Image (cartoon, rainbow, N blue to C red; front, top):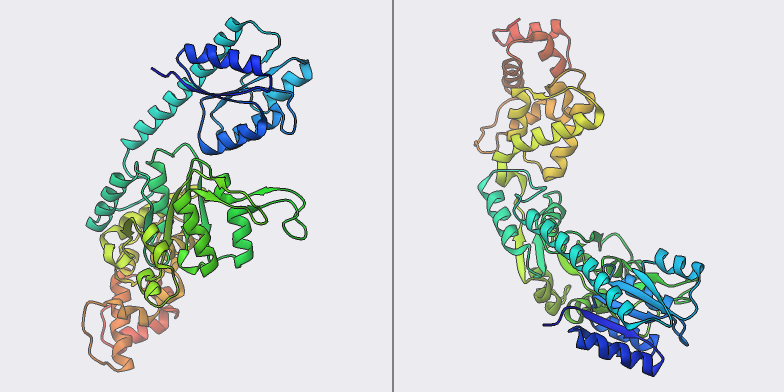
Length: 454
């Protein structure tokens, strides 16, 4: 039984062969190389549990091997072997993430013990990570508020695909919560302990997007004074959401296709392929299939990202969720602003339930933030909503009813009657909502023969 995968980097032939022989005999899966350049190549091809590296080597030394290992695989343990051990060397190695250092000449038993302890530490860390993932997988889908059939079906699909490595295409109108769906997938995935990065492909020019995604080599262009890792490299082991993927130009689509197919990328100005271990999710409010037919989006990239498709419903399709979402945002902004507001007037809720919400959840969130900001009591009232919601034309929100044409006077009468009813006959509140004084309201009520309240 193999007990761990170990990379040995040692330029002295006898030392390398002895260490390789002993560790192989112990049951470890070993790969032995004689310099740092070959170590880099091995690290780019596979992950190791432990790296044992000599410190002083030509071209690429042990510190560089340590740095590269931690860059690619932060959880891999590294032991630095040196015949020139000093306090400063040890401190530097530990600061860069080394598990320990082994001074030459060393006894083979010392190496055995150090290897065992380093692998035990890695094993415990992996166990803890796995337990956390198991706990997370048993929790409800996070971030998504709602109990409507559409949202429940979406949550169920997310739970089914989260722990796979499938590429997911998330479709939906602007403001429906596509990024929240992506975060839920990441949160329940095997990559939950790693980074989640959302990148808006429509927010950058082609050159800037390439630099942000892939990074650049030193002197790749004017002002490039050093090597810069791109966001795809920075998200190693995690999940990347390519938001608004339909906005990417054709040349960038080719590069993204290579990342998905080969799991490698090339920095701007670079000549070598760099392996990337990421899960890619994509989102768009466009009809990508139609974009493919029109020649604006590559068909091969479309099929590559469209392994699993999730359709996020717009807010009018999940109207039953509006009260839950309102309460969610109410609690959120009340806590942020330190206010005691915790109720929504029935009239307000009725207006929100009948509104079309072209901006979907994002628009509802903005409305509730404004309402909490303006509210000085504990109840959100009509006066706390945007002015458009308080105007007569808002009465036409009853979208499910076919309305006949009425005169302006008839519309005014109907709207005044509705407002008075919503505030339970309180003329002062009704006048405030209508934007007139109490005397003017009294005259209109008398003119239209409407019975007022208090």
